[in-house]
Amino acid sequence: MQKNITRLCQMDDWVFEVKMVRALKVRQHGEPYSAVANLTANGEHIYIDSHLSINNEELNKEDFLTIYRFCELMGMKNISYDRIKNGVKTSKVVDIVENQCPKPSIRLVK
Image (cartoon, rainbow, N blue to C red; front, side, top):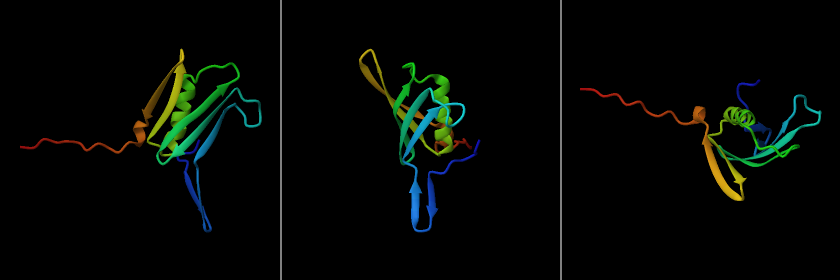
């Protein structure tokens, strides 16, 4: 796997910026996939717009961690998503710890 994935690429007089990602859950590209997620990037933040699976399963922990690692490589600062459970919509923001600005260390001196 790549170490970094760039969101920006310049070719001639054009700059290409990744703003949307379609993620497919499949072992080999071209085979039938079992789930799809659409992600939208806005600066250093990414939003999971939708997630659909063949069995109407929710996004599980392992799948979310895969998306997390992808977003980490893209240099994103956080991931946000909405979830509807029992008819109640909740929003969540997950910080990508590895991409947060380092906190200054405080050292006490006499």
